Length: 169
Image 1 (cartoon, one colour):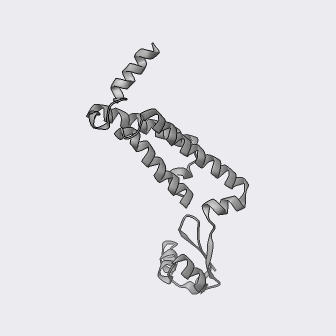
Image 2: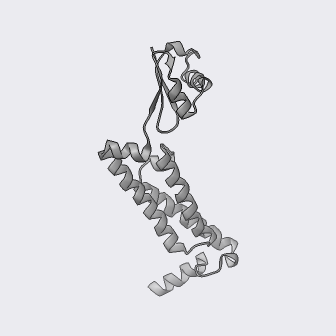
Image 3: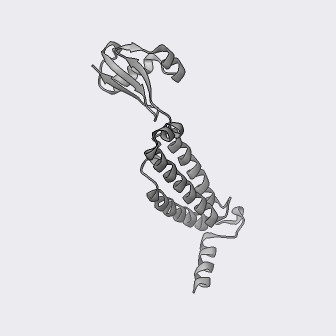
């Protein structure tokens, strides 16, 4: 029974074929199986994994997509490629769990926010280090529905996800 099922999947998915020999139906079925497997793997991870909350999340998301896509195109063995995708999700989960328990580790792998404006005064050194302009700060204010007037800003931060948050007076 197991051998018959194995042969069925080998044929249906084109397992063992060179990637240039995989047919349209086989590649389509691979895409479906990889999509379902990727969704299942991402359920194991946390919601931020593909939300690209931090550089860590973005990097792992890109690597994850690159790895599992190889299972569709046949550029890598099907099963081991899906296993590698699962390992990436588990690595992310472990790192996120450690970061939750250790603020220092979280800052190390996710970064930290940076204060850009204090009491209406732009902190020039921080703006220069972060490559944020006053135009960027004004844009953040407008997105918050505020007038583009830094004198009304109590604090502005460049957050770990790259967005600018503003606290007005």
